[in-house]
Length: 270
Length: 313
Image (cartoon, rainbow over all chains, first blue to last red; front, side, top):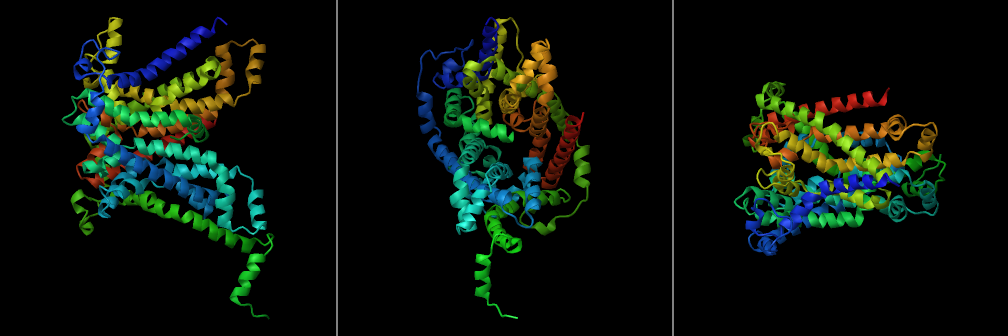
């Protein structure tokens, strides 16, 4: 086909446009400060160094931020998986008074901007003495309307016969949920889990206002403060920091990309 | 009349046949509420409660210093709303947000649709690679993106101006220019976000049977005509969906100016969400929440209009 080569060319040019900044970041993290300031800029590091990554340990406490980000993201993910699958099942498969009202109220909050809840949430968490603590970082994100929507959608697609069979066998309602239905939702749980983990890992504004001492910083907060503070001129350190923030989730995304893109396609939400 | 003890009733209920709805429902309802309760508690505390709290605050003169003595707060009616709408910075922010949405949303959707068509029709062989590549920015932290893009947009040794220099263009100091700061942020937002709309378009395109295009081909329609008159109308629900979700997201435009320009230079990139955040920072909680509610009303109205416009016709 004569036409195909230039279509691929457009595709590749697009790929370069999207990926070039990433490549530059990774390559830049191995350059010396002098080389990063050179005009015109260099692509490949001339005298490659791992000094910048060493500085992340010595000058900045990045291992600590890494642990904080991981703890918060894992807790938030676990909460969403457990609580959203529970209510998602109830909303999809069980009949109870107030079911529709509950669903409508939860879905309505999907349209409410984050800024609306921001101030009262800050007041609440601060007054509860949870500022600068793991619970303060985690609690507001333990459940999400998006998670409810995703899980409910998935449960709706499962046949009711399984529930009836469980009832005939004398399995309790909660047993039917936990032992029969929940194991069937692994694809949905995987999607929700990855999307939630990514969202939490990249979450920035809330940790920025709640984490007040250095030992509670998450990676994005630390990187933001380093890129505006007295280290703002240490470009190598910033590049290496950005790599540490980005690369773990990129690897995770590449491994699970099928679930992520499927989840996005199903729900259209980030 | 027989006297039925509590335990006997329970025994009867347990063995009741499935045909008796009332008893079945009550057992189901207990289970349902047990499953829903943890969510409901957290949702009330951290979502619904703050939403109502915000609404309440927006009608008061609450400031940061009132937090320990909540009874010193006075109601001011719609005072904060009037003040917000009359505020110079807020109007500037509203204008900038509109600028961002009006240019940014169509641009994002066009790039996303073009990329989706490219993936669906053009680059079949390496589709997964291209898909993942285009999607990378969506899963990247905005702070890392800011670090990277500050280098891309840097005036003298930046990637963009270096490339422009090759073709003889002397690029401006993008983020420090009142004219170019906003287009720079829009470009960054499109780069960062088109991937998620692209995935939805891709799902939409793959849902259209090949026979539609084949029929067009037989009728002698060119590839652009087939796209314009056969594919695009069938994509209408998908376009509605992506324009609504992208619109909702872009109306809350916050992170790009927050990490790149702090709203400058001279408020030329301040957004409504940023103005809200600034008032929060100044401790003017009443004013901040009223601004957030104005944004919410605008989002609700625009979403409603989008639905009406794109659904009918």
